[in-house]
Image 1: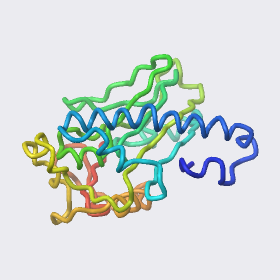
Image 2: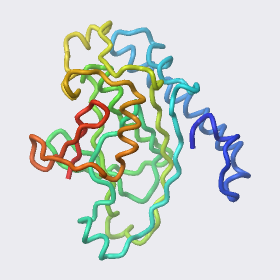
Image 3: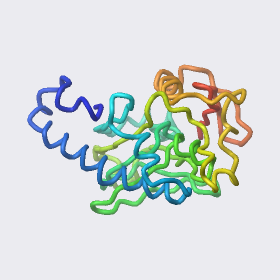
Length: 242
């Protein structure tokens, strides 16, 4: 659900009594967690601490949203078809993603040496994924978190898995180009390597292209690395990891 629409949009009947609590939760996460993380990122890049806070606020120009997900155990036939992968390796198109830790494992991240590693559950912890927008803004100094969802380990396989995930995105009219005022970005100079033809897309163009192609409606082509497939979406070379 979009941050601005929690109290006004139609929701399923069982959810409605909890909307005030969900709204307060979303505002707390945005103001006290997201904004502080964005300030830290801006300061590490040598920018004014409010630089990214302004670009990622919850105004009408931004598509920030909170998601509740429940995964159920799947038939063995489906697991074999997907090789136990529920969502193949990818990066999020947003600025940052918050994943509130829960006890049934399924999330994995790709390490620097190209191996998948389980994300350990810690009570009351939050997993923070860097998204593509921050990678572009930082000229590659911060890199998007490559992650996937797969079948839980044997001892958790028959339990449903509940996820609470909060995505924050820049305003739709923001161009996803490196912030050249940053001394670190000037030295990195990596921000345009994934752009198609050197043209810098807006957040709206990139976001809509990623959302519309969710599920792989467009044919993928082999990437330069083994096990990586790529496609051009919204002016960006998007990579998928098998």
